[in-house]
Length: 538
Image (cartoon, rainbow, N blue to C red):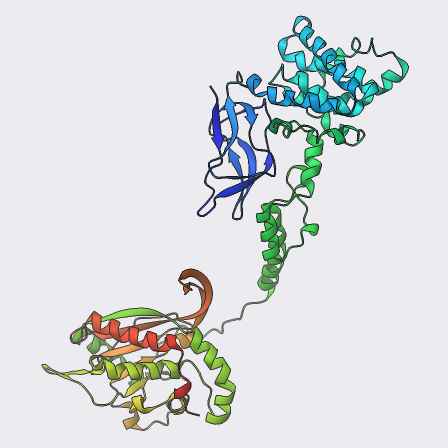
């Protein structure tokens, strides 16, 4: 019983595939999961395995043909159906008659020895006995030998392909004998060489010394003729063939295919060859990078010592513990696409520094967006006074500054009234005077909301601690470029974007998760709009 093997689904949205190479031929036996053929699509270049074990009875799709998913490619059975498939190649005999009428007259002569073959040798050797019968016509019409040999091959389906390859192997020998001996006795001395004809190594050398059979190969029109072509010719034809997927891969990676050595059959370039070629420069780059010495870390003189806490460190420690024990703290995080902010900042930063006298970092953008959101969601700016909630009439933003003495938080007052230039100037001034220990005592008091730039040292985000009496603190992570999914005209696409995490820690006694989320989304929307031209301040 025969079973058809269809072109399987090869990925989402793939509807068709091109047969690039048959790995088996009619009459071959295959096992389950043994590769049958290679198929190329616009997304994948792969081998199609056999779902069943058996003998290939017919190949239904020729090489370089494009068919839809679900199309029958080959029929596999127990071998009994192969004979039923071989009448198609019989149509090749009339094709051989076109060169001369003598070739058609000789076709019956070839059939006669083929009929006698079972009486002389076992049935499986019958195709080998057909080879001597072709020596007589070799003298008169050499170009018709290949098609003529395929007509009697129909009587022995299993080794049909080797029989078709016999002319290219034995053709030189009969021609030499024909010059010294009459055609009639030629079949008698050749049974022994004919036994060697099915050996698969023979066709390879025959392709080079014997160019004459090549013009005859286009004559067959039946689908089974493609796998019956000489193996050497097939190898030559695929040496320069590159599937669309491999060609696109090489283009995307900047690889010149003329510089790539193919490892496929016949020297064909495969996907792995392109990947290997592109990996070589990458490996060299990695080697160079690895060769660069890593930055040496200095050994701290504090190793192995014991020092008393500074007064500031004691205050910070006590306040941190009291805040954690006296409030119910948790953190919410959002991811923000600040690509438009980054682009705008790149456009104006040179002019900004020239006019404002300070650099324009990302922090003023975060501070301005937070100040605006605090006005809309005052609970984030509120404090607890006994059993009451106090909503300040101003937004005083504390800016966390890292110093050698510890973390200090000078205050930017009335932050909602400032533009980008105002934030940038105050942040730069407060940070410098904090590190130089030149702050006034009142500049560290009165904050209603804290902004800490945890990304300044490379952290993506953390969960900052809220210090009482404030109820919230916003941590801004490092701005990094990475691939993300974006909406592109109603569809999804992957793009390189500048991304940052914003983490809001809050006192759950008065701030709910929904409050935190609304505030964070407001800041997110403000930043992702990228509309800060009216707030530049220069």
